[in-house]
Length: 92
Image (cartoon, helix red, strand yellow):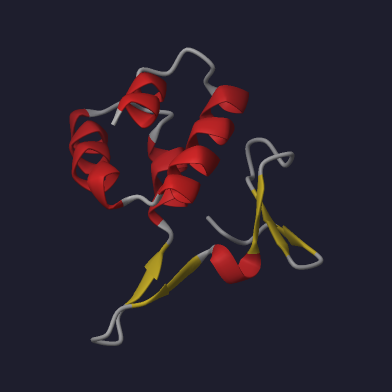
């Protein structure tokens, strides 16, 4: 999922114009568990709109910082300009 990189940037495999610094791809919890940045995971999940993806979006949205929401919104506008999550990223 995160194999596509150029220089210090991760590139979204489906649309390489969507990128993120490699340093922003994820982190590690205080317990030592690595995780993928939620906005990137949600971008991948946005394609299917399965019930479990909607549930994940609903649970992750309150925890997304303004910068992460904006990044996801911009990415969704690029690949899914009519996506139903766009309004929620703006409204909440």
